[in-house]
Length: 400
Image 1: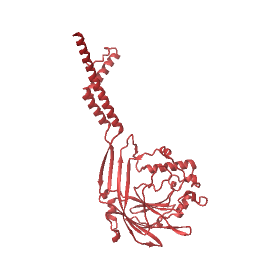
Image 2: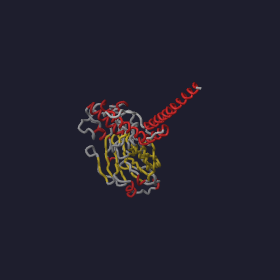
Image 3: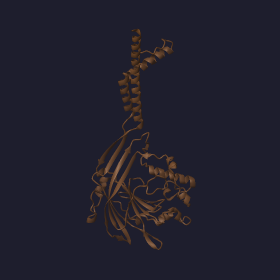
Image 4: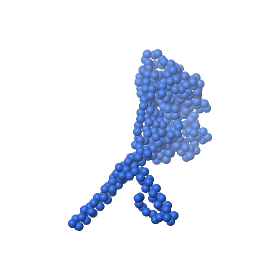
């Protein structure tokens, strides 16, 4: 009987020790899973559609392909790259035929005065490093509601708009003389935010230029434009920059420009604003400098926390011969929908407060304790340690 009673007692003692230990292990496992979830930073995405009057009015850029797209073909000993692009490219007066609402100007642009203000914004002409000669960017300073009130509706039955009109634009399709014949320039249209578009990769591995639409001569073109604004919360696993007017592609471009200035001490045509004090590059290696993926990663260019993008879809194209001064004209109209703007907000859903509250709940459920009881125990231990340290009662690790 005594041996049997001792065996039962040991079993009960093991059960008393095993139950708290299992609860402690379960609480630890659950805490580890909660911490892992917190470190993974799950996000919640909220989306809403907005009416046309809340849509940011897009900027547009018209770029023309140049006769010297390859830097190895540039006559660098006779002329600088910037001079060549301004001589082969077109000024604003050589491109713009008409623009509505209130975006037409008869004033011209040039290398000395590249920007011209208009009632609804401003036009800026700038030389491009690669692929194009000059580009012409219209940046509006009016809201969509003001545009809808000011726009002039064309009554031509072939170009009746299917929705609200944002812009009516007509440009010349220029030609250049090469190999004893006149070759038409390629004309590309970019629809973008108020930041300068990335019309071509300046030489950064992995950088994607903005999407463009080809504008053929003689055509009446109608494009459907929608916009999406994405707002991200900075996360540890995916940091982003909240600086106003920040864009990762432009940050990488500036990093390339800084590397060119440091390595060669000269500037390319697009560096006239950032490095006006430097002389023009007259060598092919300087103009073709590239950043590989590892060098681009060292530039420190995170994703933008706030990103506005536009989607352009060809809605109608009508062939219509129209020439002026011997050059074909392209007529372009940007239209949109009743609810063309989408706002997407990405936020972290599992924060530190949620982590602590869930850990406390599991610990209290499995171990029979709470944050208040743990706090009370800690205060008691601190009080006993204080008394023992100052020569009072000996330290006793009991709570009773």
